Length: 378
Image (cartoon, helix red, strand yellow):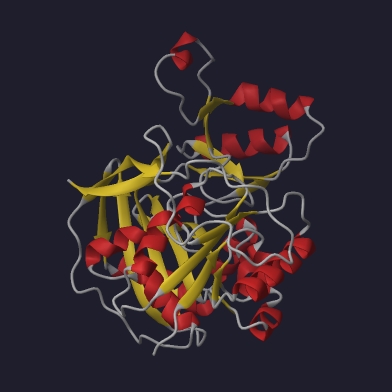
């Protein structure tokens, strides 16, 4: 009899409820039990898990590693998919292996390269992957100089934190004065240069931003599955242009993604994002974790979360080619049930009883999380 697989997702995005769904619906018909932890008691990820706990707040990276090792030993975790404190966790891979847990994450050297976008851009440029022009700025004068140089070349300037995930902190610079026009309609990423400069001159807090031209669509995110032998098993691009999304196997996107994934050892799941700079696809960002939209590849007939878990368990699926590319689609929000009551505070480490039942209780009508994304064909 084949034993069940126990998978843990620590503090992660709400969209990963779909990651969890795919693990349970795996084509191997293998029993999967999912443990989840989060800092938000009303996270839909906790509601979707078989067992769940609130994560303790205020832990240092080293303290979090100790907490994670205890979780893996106490819960019998076979595969751990770390997002929170990933860099600290992967530095202790041997200790997790000693308690019987495989880490579904790259080695520490690979994670370190892509924590800082400047280091990342310099590294990938050295292996032949095009990147946009960029400036690292830490004060108002450096910001103004970078913006002026970009504008003189005919580009619109934008900035984002040199380290960070997703679109957090991304802004587009405009010189149009603040007016009532900016208070009508929905908020936008545009911010007035004079307001940013004034804020920088008045603060004592350090900033570390990357300034670059605003890149054009399409945006293509290449999801890669790479083995510990540095060989890519699967690479599929997800394209985005406005609301329309689709899939691509064009080598102008996949070739540089493979070069990065294999060259830097981005083992298991990574997401490598490109946009257009003129007529050239250039690197925008590299995520050393599963993308929130990874589940969308199910429209191409592949269950990538399960393939990754197999690979982490040493069950190499070999090279995987999608049987087809799904039709274009869009992403919409939909309801997801929460638990009837908030999850209690974490219990003492010596207690072994799960804090959630194997089948979460039905939620009342008004207890829904509406921010999770579903995919619909166009």
